[in-house]
Every structure is written in C-alpha cells, then in structure tokens.
Length: 396
Ligand code: GDP
Image (cartoon, rainbow, N blue to C red; front, side):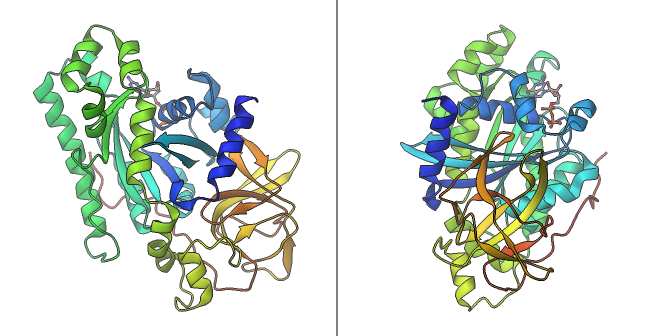
C-alpha cells in the first residue's frame, strides 16, 4: 500500500476516537519560522520526504503566495503521530503570518483547540505574536510555545549558556505576560501560562530540524550543553537524528493540547449564545457523532474540479454526502456533495463521512461563507468571528 493511502487509512480509523484527536494551529509573526516548522512536522509524520522544498507545494496553495514568499490562505493537513503507544490524529490548520491577514488567523482559531505559538529567539515576541496569542485566548484555544532559531544564538551571536538561558527565559516571560494579561478575569480558563518544567515550551531550530523540551531532555539526554557543543562542531545532522524537532513538537501537541472532548464543553459557551440547557448544546459539548450536524465554516477555497470547498470544524453529528443542511443567514438548504479531509493541499473524499470533533472539507455548500454555521436543524448561529489585527501594546 502506498504511503499516502496508509496515512489516509490511519486518519480514518482515528477520526472516530475524539480522545486521540488534536485540532491545532501554528501561529507566528512573519518570518519566525512557521512554514519551516510545518515542513518538519509533515516530514516527521511521514507525509513528505525529509527535505524542505516539497512542502512549500503542500502548504502554500496560492501561486500568489509563493511569489510574495508569505503564506496567505489557510491550508490544512491531517497527519498521525504515535505518542505513549497511542496513535493520534493531528489536524493542522495553517495560518497566515502577515499582520494584514489577521482575519484569517482568527477564523482558523475557531476550528482548533490548541495553538502552537512560534517565536524567533533572536527577535523575541513581536506585535503579531501578541495578536495571535490574543486571538487564541479569545477563542478558548490553549497556547504552547516553540522558540525557534536557537541555532542563531549559538552560531551567529556566539552566546554562551548563561546568555542564552537569559534570553530564552525573557521570551517565555514576555509570552506569559501576554497570556496572563488576557486570561486574568476568565474563570473558564485555567492557568494557561507556559513553562519549561510543564513541557509546554520547546526550543530548537526548524532550519536544522532539531528540538528539545524538558521531557525530550529527560528521554534523550540531549540538553543545552550538548546542543551548544554540537552546533559549534557543525554536527547538526547528528543533532537532528538524536533529538528530532518533529517528535519534540508532536509529543508536546499530543500531551498538552486538549482533545475535542475536553475542549468543546469550554469552547461552546464562549462561541455560541444559544440555549445551553438544550439537547443541541449537550450534543455539541459531548462531541456527539449521532447528534445533529453542527459545522462551523472557517475557510472557503477553490478547487478547479470540485468548485468551492468549505473547510471548518464539526462540533456535532456526522457530516455526509447527500445531507440537506441549513446555512445561517440564508433561506433554504444546501445539499452536501462530498465530504473529506485534507492531506496537504489535496482533499481526500471519504464516503463514510466525517464525525464530530474533526476538521472537514465539504463541497456543495454553495451559500456558505467563512463564518457560516451549517446545521441539520435551524439553530442560533455561532458568534461572528471578531477580527483582531491591531496589537494593543506594541513592542519596539
Ligand atoms: P514564516 O514566515 O513564519 O513561515 O517563516 P519561514 O518558515 O518562511 O522562515 C523565514 C526564514 O527564516 C527563512 O529564510 C527560513 O529559512 C529561516 N528560518 C526558519 N527557521 C529557522 C531556524 O531555526 N534557524 C535559522 N537560522 N533560520 C530559520
């Protein structure tokens, strides 16, 4: 069986097990390394060969983007990752890194439960870092931190262990300040600040494909002294082999990001103002795949063959070909033509449909726009997604 087919089959098996699903976004200030990190994850999950360029094709779907060298449209990919002897389905939504596209970042956040915030170790937290953290927390999405480009501290800036530690702790402190400022009055969110000890912070080099976290250091014995030594000796390949970035980050995702069963009870009241005593509210909280279909569209893209594809989060029910669904704000119903998941830039249609808790790609919803609530019964639509693109505090 081909690799792709095998991955699709694995994803299909995992789709029905919400406790093993993680819906995540990677968000960063432009140039901090989101695309390079995504390449690592796809390679680590066996989706592409272990080399850079191939994935640009997978994630950067618009020609326009490649010309400009920035990612504009949110692309999506599903992959699997084994952690503690259990396989996980990781649905990754790509978000634009440019500040002008703040709206798209917010929309992507509605579909996910965890946000991996990438910060360049040299530049530190930037205005767009603040924006993405704000967007994540507003949507009830849990953050974790990846500090990238640590190789530059060693090779370019020639920093020693103390200097490096101080700099990295400063970055963590700045990100936590943002998180704390935005969660202070929230009793539905626990302490979501990130820390090395808890394993919610990882460090590394997306370019050279190595990474570390407290759990990885305990497991591999590769810590900062080893990293400094190996970077200085130009042993980056060895470093990648002994402590691969994709394992470090995907382990963190599996361990620390909530699954839909944990996330939806907290997120639904935050994004939906309908009757929370209703049967429908119960179905959404419980990720009930036998319940009514409730699908929130977060992105519309064009496929040359299939036409418009609505991508979004399925909070309840099972979405299938042939269903007649309401689209909020429009009269009448739309008929679902096909349902699938994204594997890189390509859509994989699944005849059996897609169950609650997943990200689905749906055709036939001709009246849907990004932000539409699509459902099998008429319902209060989800809250409109507020676009935040202005950071409140700007760091110089
Ligand atoms: P994005 O805009 O956040 O998607 O950033 P990219 O992944 O496109 O990276 C921006 C630039 O930083 C590219 O030139 C990358 O090669 C470079 N880069 C990414 N990660 C690293 C890293 O870990 N170390 C170094 N030295 N450069 C990196």
